[in-house]
Structures are given as C-alpha cells and as structure tokens.
Image (cartoon, rainbow, N blue to C red; front, side):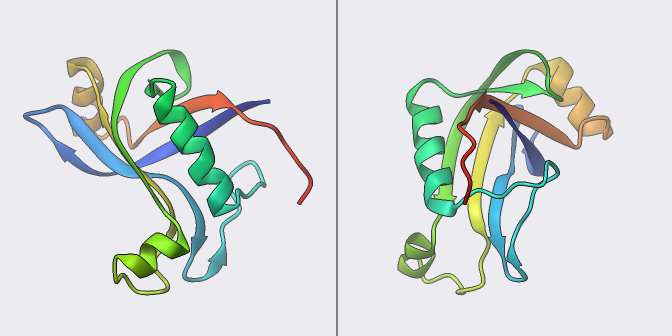
Length: 129
C-alpha cells in the first residue's frame, strides 16, 4: 500500500529554506496515537521504516501532489530507549522528527501559512496488530 505521512511544521529557517517538525508520532503522553487514516505504527517499526527511507535517499512532497522534490536533511526517531538515554522525560512523544529543505516557492507558501504541513510518501505493508 502507498503510505503518506504529513509533516506538521514546527520550525522554519528562512535563510536555508528548511522546515522541521514531527513526521509521525506513535505515542504521546496521552497514549497511543491513531492517525487520520485510523492506523497506528509501532515505534520500532517506524524507526526501521524511517531508517530505510533515509538510506534509500529521502525526499518529501508538497501536500501529496506531484513529485517529491524536497530533500530530507535530518531524521531522528525518538524510541523509549533513546528518550531514556537522552535523559528526556518518560512522557516525551515517541515518533520521528525531520528537517526538509524546500524550494523558494514552497517556502513562500510555508511562510504565508498556505502550507502548514508537507508530506513524506512511500510504501508500507499493512499487518494486523
């Protein structure tokens, strides 16, 4: 199945045309997170998928339209083990944060508020939990 993840933009850098935010959250302080499609992803499966995504040359699209021209520059998946090792609070969200470089047109849309999120697209296998 085709998988689409929306990146909620939390920070931006105008000089470098980069945006950063949560690509996916598996578990928040309130518990397991169910996404807009009614599914959830185990944090360790998310970590494996994001590592494969980065290894294969990670790119992001714009609002699930057209090609994926925007390179993903950084990616970090916060697993329970990494959260503990970093000394973060135990209720810190379990999920993946990414930084994406976007072109001038896309960045202008981010800046004006037309784009509140970008997308990461790929392939996923659906399994019963």
